[in-house]
Image (cartoon, rainbow, N blue to C red; front, side):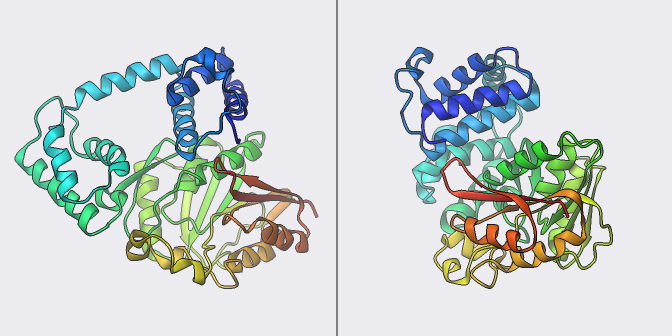
Length: 358
């Protein structure tokens, strides 16, 4: 979706899919709000390109509306009411942001998550809360520790997930993979789903929650990651989701999955060294890098997947920005058909999905 008209059409279709009575109007309201322009001017600026942040904000509003089953006007009212309930001493906090080197472009996200994490009442914050805020500022600003690890949570697909340094921080791009998997499975009455390299469990649990009659198995080789995933399963009441330890599919006995999904480690070693400092220092390398130019796990999973899929079952991967053609060839070599490379909002290659019908 490169321009305003593209995302307007996409948003309208998405609202239609979830039976909103006025999908075009809701799409216009969301987009005009995010872009800060009048609705009528959307069509005068139809070819305007959108930046990544605008696309992400539009998508987040749409997901909130779908989850809550409310229109955009009602969503804004709820947001306004919530904001008046939380009174934080902003001037003092901004000084803290300055002194602890929190970059200006990160401040809005920081304040939103911080106040959401600590202050839930219409009152002044206590001395102990101020101390906690100062400690967080030091961790994030001076020690470069990711905000999500400091707070101990990240939101993904409308759900709240516990995270620590034993798992990757969930990225919003992965929500696109979840959306596509839901589309593939929503017409199957009781889909069986396998999530390989489940990490914190965000894919498994999101699919389990959205596909209430599904049975989802998440596997990971890391005991620590499995502990996080199991905690998130309980916190999100995902009773149809199970997590076990397995090196790819070695410990998976079931052979009739409708869908195998994976967001495996895919960063080549030579690219790992140039990642952001906070990623290098805090996120687990085991969950990020893979041999063979980042393609190792795509090869291993694709070779084994036919032994665990029903006829016409799907294999869905998240991929790196330049791996689409390589992963597609791996899947073709293993008899997958109808293979499609999908792009994210930034027009980067993001997913490869194919069907196995032998």
